[in-house]
Image (cartoon, rainbow, N blue to C red; front, side):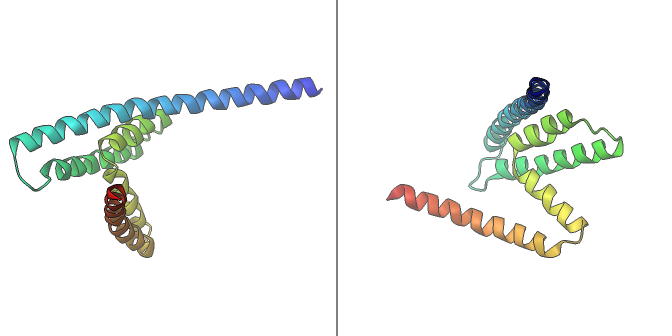
Length: 143
């Protein structure tokens, strides 16, 4: 009897592990593509519109927000609930392209559910502490 239970446990563990590893691969591929697209688009925009203002980053952030909105909107509208597609497109591609898209989407969800305090804390906290963390990192690197 213990032998049957241990076989069941290990086969279930292997199955869950294989699914999890497959999910990591989808995120990895999407993230790689998103990162390359971000790099290419930032270079292109910076070359076409030279400025001290980071137009490339702003454009990537806005396009990433539009993309993640379209991805979640279409998957909800057409009930395309494939975990792998959402992982590839939203987590991977958009996450590699810009994490700002995930930040914007999560904040939009907080507003939709009426969680205004959490929205405010997330927005202000991420901006203030994020910029503060960059400053701290630069400062620590100079020590």
